[in-house]
Image 1 (cartoon, helix red, strand yellow):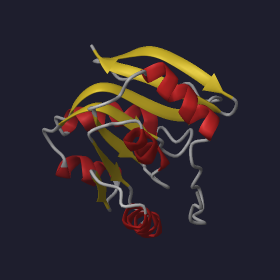
Image 2 (cartoon, one colour):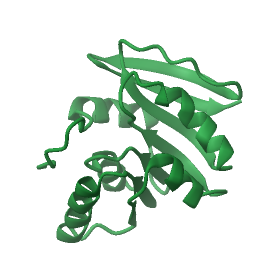
Image 3 (cartoon, helix red, strand yellow):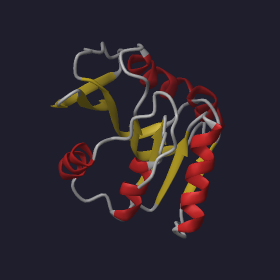
Image 4 (cartoon, one colour):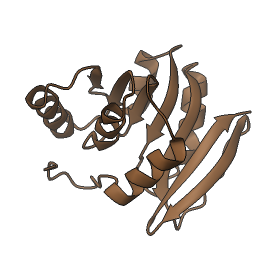
Length: 164
């Protein structure tokens, strides 16, 4: 898959995606939210594995255009794109529930720790939250959220969280 040339865009490697979905198991019928979507690869992977719907949020217009083109070219259904920053996008999605939320914020910027708080502020329900972060960075998760496991894959670490 060709991804747009956008500074800071780093699509999740196939090895990490495969490991993630092996850990998650059957995702058929789940609802998903992909934050800091970038290339949209996580939403596409989830849709290809049978999720009921995916919503991708990203503020970069070039990334959104590339996802729109991919959605149309590949005739992808049940994939909604929200061209907003994550905080603004979460406000738009307030009070909804997602079985699975993926987030791939800029590494080591402190945003990982903010994401659960933003979900709480927007009253967004979540079965599982998976945050991709630098394996060199150790986030401190906010009160009310429980780290279930962390899995490092080279420079990337996947953190699996649930609400207390």
